[in-house]
Length: 322
Image 1 (tube, rainbow, N blue to C red):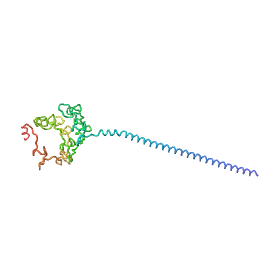
Image 2: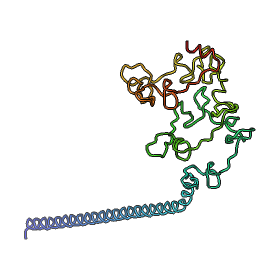
Image 3: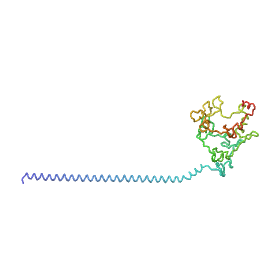
Image 4: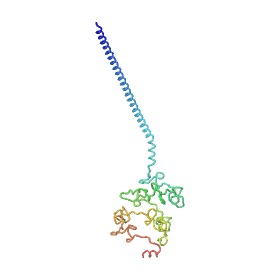
């Protein structure tokens, strides 16, 4: 074999060896990459499983906590229920045990009308109910006053009196079709409510007391204002003004607002239902057939026999007719 052929043979064999080495290297590299990919997939799978387990554990703990909370709240409600019932029972107003009576119980299961004893004012001869300090309001029992400046009325609701915005719902008589206000026992005076009348202290007078133990007639001495009767209505608070206060402690001239008729352009004062008499406000008419005059007393007008009090001084009567 020549030298040239020998060299060619060696070169060919070395080339085959190199190719085999490269193939083996590539194979090893591919196997390594497969192993790395498999390891990464296994790690990822483990992470996913652990996160799902964590989420499952968290949700389970939340459900358990909610169940416990619900059970505890139910137990609390069960425990508090008797206390709530007792509180409700406490605020339910008991009614008088007398048959057909709707008044509130005061003492011994009955109202004042049916025998419940009430403390009376300790001032001599006073039959009013005692409030604070053993006396009635008339004799000094302090009550909350209206928060409006200068107002001495008693508080009704929200720190104000009825005049300054307190809304008070008055009960109506339970008799069907009657719109009168309840006085006692769920009915008005017309339908049987008995009102205890304190009579005037003047000899022979059967009129009801208004102020100072006497009726209006004997409180003003039976005379008109011209002959010395004192006017009990509030005067306008403006200095030097002797007119009667209408609203807010002042007269019309000094700013007391009056409700006007709701009819467009009407300057008259509203009487009833937001309108004046001209636009439909109804007032009681004389019961005599064909008479449209306003009732004064006993269902009739002056013309048909309603008695109007006159001053006891003769010259005043003659003066008033002039």
